[in-house]
Amino acid sequence: MNKVVIKFLSIIAFTLSASVVFAQVIGGSSQSAVNTPIDNVFNEIHVEFKKPVPYPPLRQADVIYQKRVWQSIDFREKMNQPFYYPINPHVGWKSFMSTIMDAIKGGELTVYDARKDDQFTTPLTWNEIDTRLKGASMLVDSLDENQVFVKKVERYPEEYEAGEVKSLKLKEIWYFDKQRSQMMVRILGMAPVREFVDAVTGQPKKETLFWIYFPDARPILVKSIVFNRKNGGAKLTYDDVFWKRLFDSYVYKEENVYDREISQYAMGMDALLESNRIKTEVFEMEQAMWEY
Image (cartoon, rainbow, N blue to C red; front, side, top):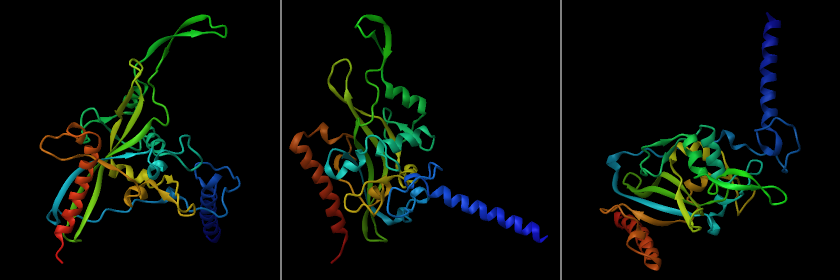
């Protein structure tokens, strides 16, 4: 009997030691079991086991004010550049789009057709997304080393390339919670916007690729590292960036009776002033709720 117990305990100890060794792997990543030098001065705490911070409980009766707002994050702004880089993934460090695309390919994340609406009504499969990212095919001449025609080959001149997504749309709800006496915000969805050159006209073109239901994406975003400009020892994740509002954005639409964007009735500086007016309106509403 004692031999059976000892053997059973030995198996458990071996399993635990193997899991520890697997966690301390190449460059602080658990994606490989190769035992290589650690690219740091300490063993990093892995984000594979992190979970999103849960939303605070909310009742409909506690919401006494609500406004639905659409914002845009421009990756070219200095504060937002951690979304864009690195264009080519490093060990344990990927751009926002690389994180999203890998999750979609792996079946971890469902996306919705942006050509229909922004209300998450029409799911897309990876094959449908892949077809759209390739664009229309064209037959072009294939030449040999002497520039002699060989044959016609099929090409995709508008095929998606890494780095073409330079902005991200956010669909948010700002609300005042009377239980906490605080104006709060929940992100409902996000949509990457691709910028490329039209193969026919040669003109710049923008396309909203798809919508993502944000709560579904949080378990994925919380496991992806973001570069921290202030402190390399304090790791941030994409979920931290959204949760702590560590980005700069501008309003391009608010809920309205005409269901129109700001660009449809204001241009240039007027559009910027209108965006600021909407943000100020939400801020002033919060101040109006307080009694001094």
